[in-house]
Image 1 (cartoon, rainbow, N blue to C red):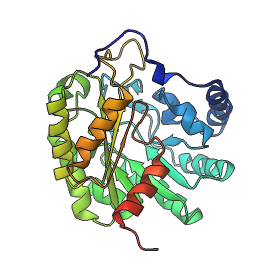
Image 2: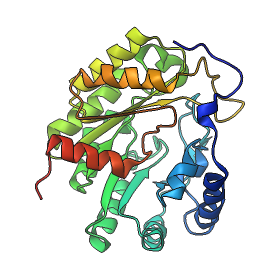
Image 3: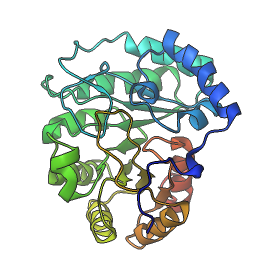
Length: 296
């Protein structure tokens, strides 16, 4: 496999048209939806999503109670949940004519339910005003609180996503405050409580893992009955974050996809710029059609 280089590989270069689209939609985000994970986490592929008029809304503020070494979201003491976030999201859905919405948040360990009630409130508001809009929630682990998880499930999102992010052996380095087995249990419990809802998880590569460790992670996630797996390249968002140990080629991502499919995932989306919510609508439709999980 490819070794790391200081220079960003050619397959990460963005076209000028995409950069223009990024600037255009960024203006809307700054005025209408100030809390977008696309901006807050400095997502490297936001330009492509923006050209399609798709973005992931970040609810529960922009301050995280944890301080993961791979993430650039602000760490500190968060503000209380703001129910007005729902109004801004509903307005953006109308302006952008969105058909598929992704909601995510920082970890909110300061809240009794980890923010689950706020997730549920916004999902319900979206479904009430736009019944045809599909909603994916990319949730934190809620510190393993099953009641909090049930609260989100009861709001009836179409996809529940919880990212594993990396292999077990790198949690101490990349995900301080999180527990590998606890995250697996969140995914497993979600499918047990709501077998009709698509479940999803994502992994980053390039943090120092090897192929055997990745394959073990595929097995662990599959054993938690996850339907959809995303695989993408870790890119250092800020000078204070973990360094990239190496870059994987597009061909290697194809190989990883084939390995993952052997474990029975219904859909695997794998590529250098793939992120958990990247082209989420496309992944949802692919999983829905491939698995025939939904009746028409």
